[in-house]
Image (cartoon, rainbow, N blue to C red; front, side, top):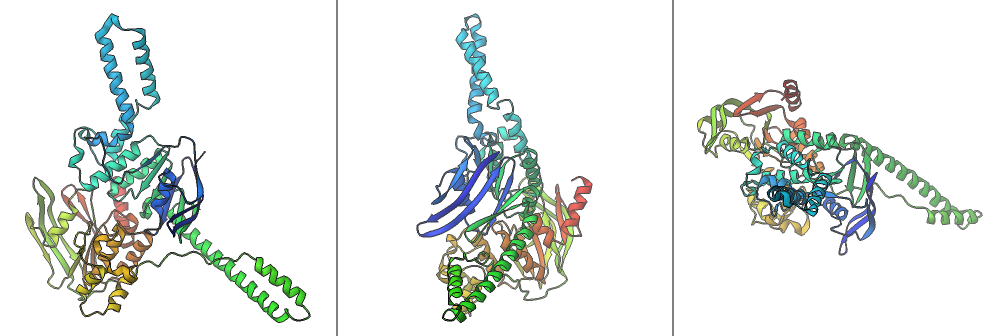
Length: 537
């Protein structure tokens, strides 16, 4: 059954055209991944589907009564005091009816022989309505989803929403989506606040529940695991492909190659006809030449395959080779008030190691990094960064960016001898051009801030890169550029990421949390995954 159909959708903001000719049809049970560069208009497609925005051209056809679930980006959880209430927000009417039935049951018990037929009829009708609305299933659904997303279901009934961190609020918002009774689930970067285990749970939930899904994501492993179709937004338009992300890549390449061949074939034909017309328009074959000219004028001309602006150009250069022992860690204990995060960890980070630091949310990865770099004192043991080691730290919250400075000034502060052209060329390599380079960093989007942080990192000459969730705000094309840059990098890297495709590509060693024990797996991330699967972990 078709749930949704978009036909030749076009969206403009004033005179600026954002999208055109967006066409695709979603059937029940299908799971569509929507991919494209940051700012390509993926979120605008969501707003058209929900009806929050009307397309300038084209039409959206929805199944009558189509129910959709879309994450509230503000995560206000209005009316909810506890985590459980926030997760069950879409079931408010059922919860209210449940309370009413409980109140009626108590009243009927108190009245005894005075109960009227009307009261009994209402009680029975409300019970039937409660069953029809899914009242006997929603409790189990709320508990299962909260548990799957890392919350204790019982504790969630008393834990206050006001105590949640930003990442936890994101997970509660996602839980509310999954729990809501909906025909169409619309997910916008759902894996951003999830750890590896929770992402694996979400994949299985979506497949086992048979949900119909539209998901905007840059997580290629996630798209591979769940998608039956891919909608690719490129050059303001879209094309759809059957299959997951890995199947989309060769299909897209084949389509582009076919179009390029068709275009070359048409160009050769047009050139040949134009030469004939030029030679014969005034000669004996004038009649044939004029006929060819008319046919050429009516010929629909093929356009070159679409292309988005180029991805960033990224290169990490090492200023000093550094020693073979980058960081020495001995008997390390990391604590926060009332809790041990890491206990008795000893390891040596070696030159050219690419280490993935893996663990559940809240395990202490950021605190461990701060301790390793000397920003936080260890509770016990020692960490020593080599004297010839220069670290550069990409923070998950991008909190060390000089927000009040213009991008141009931030680069020039690192390279005071550069002239204007050199600064603009450097920023241009990261997708910032023209007068845009004079924007204050505080005005940038998340993706733009991530590219700006990388633009500054490349000037550091660091031989140790510490990357905390570097892919969170990057689109797929720029993630692949980052992978290529790290492949050419001659230093040492410590990476925190939930992007399995990224870790499979770059990590040669894994440090992973097992409770308060940090374990050292001296092998690629792919081998660590296989080892964990064998252990059933």
